[in-house]
Length: 230
Image (cartoon, rainbow, N blue to C red; front, side, top):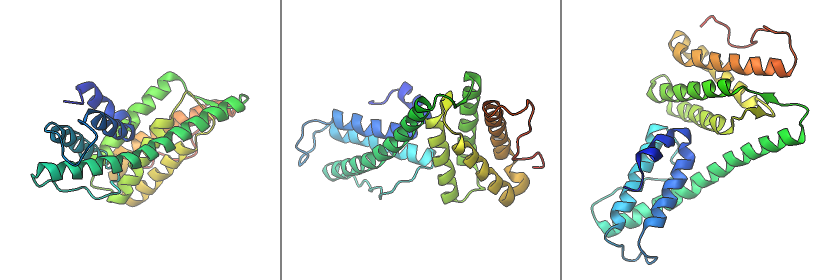
């Protein structure tokens, strides 16, 4: 096995980076550089990575972008097909990981260049938001309320939000974008959306407290969005 339990446990924290790591690990474990004939062990190496990436894509409802090849039992042909797929999906998700990293770095530099103002979360608030985002991801994956495109968009938003969270942030716009999604869900699904909306309400309360404190608003100023009618 190329991927131990510790690696699998960490996939949930960053599915995008995990896909990139899987492709890199598989490529480093393949035998030789001449892929006109595959080594006996290459099939198992490729098959494990190929299967794991498909499982991650399905579990987290990630976009595939390219066609997943069919495996027909011809080891030489299957190795070539799996290798081509892994390298193609690896390039796509490496670009996505770079985009997320760039956003994180820009956020960091904005704070450094503008030390006079930043939204600062407590560690406890950050930990709680991470828990709520993980619960949201599980609910979205298991829910029948959402169309596939809507589900994919929500999961992508959660992925980026989770990757960019820090104790100090130059803006909290992405949080409010998530809250805007909650309003759409309330409008479409009403009471059926309650488990989903409840968690976003809790996130919005944490974000609002942090924002209100940074903006020096009076203590106890109520959250302006997501009332308690749902």
